[in-house]
Amino acid sequence: MRKINNIEQAFAQMSYRLENGKYEPKQIDLDAYSFLANWVMENKKQALKNDILFAKLFCRVFAQEVHFYKGDFKLAQKTMHHYLKHPIEFYYEKFTQEVNDVLMNKYINDLGITDKHPALLTDKERNLENELLKDKAMMDYFEGILKEDKVFISLNNTITEFCNKYKNLP
Image (cartoon, rainbow, N blue to C red; front, side, top):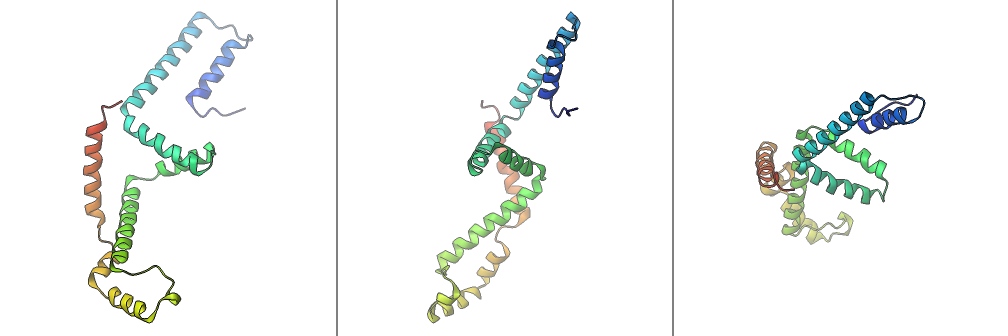
């Protein structure tokens, strides 16, 4: 016996039972089925309308995952489930780490520190890098310029502003 995992499968099973000829549905059975189908469709439309911003971003990220996995929709869906199961704090922390990495790399490049392998550096380049690495500002970048509490507040403000600005657009 197969397990029913979603509303579509439940309706497919009910349709099969009502249409297979072994069971003679009464008009009330057909009316009940029709009522439930209409109710579910209206609820789905309303849920999508309520979460239109999520739906837009979901479509964008899902398309990127499908592209990344070269058309493997199941693997892309599995990744989407992985993304959505984490609490929002996980993503705030990840955002903070990634932005701090970008800022640190930009700072290092702006100072002239190269990404050469240490064995390929000249003595002059090695001495310059050693001096730059002693800099207090460099340590701030290594520890992370952006702090989680500030990022949390800033992201919440930005998210709220975007929600307010775009929530009523189709």
